[in-house]
Image 1 (cartoon, rainbow, N blue to C red):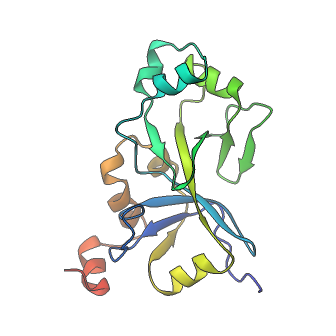
Image 2 (image 1 turned 180 degrees about the vertical axis):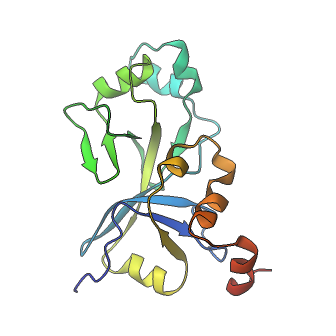
Length: 186
């Protein structure tokens, strides 16, 4: 199968007709998209009942007072026990992966730095990720389940989780009320 569209480094924004509750009104940052499939991170959903300090305690990491303010994001349903940090390109560790617009780190050293207030200002701590097999994302795009959009740092790292989805659509000139009527959801 020849890959005709590579969306790596872009956003996927769920359409109003998304029926899967795990992805309803979500924005996903695509980390990988190639002939083998796609991998992404939901950036606008948090776990309300999991806190960073509890994760740090399980990892035996001491934290500063700023650690209490770090939300744990729901990155997707795959490998939900796996944690990592999406962040700007101003802070690296040995295990940091460069993914176009952002970097991804998961080492204990990096998480320790984050817990002690030495991490990058712009970051998202995530558990889990989303994934698609070969051709699956393309099929969903053809069925208007997702719309792709350029990466936007302001939307990515903004702490206002509740409006990211709408702002993501507005950022590409899509008015939700018009999109809803086109999708059949009034």
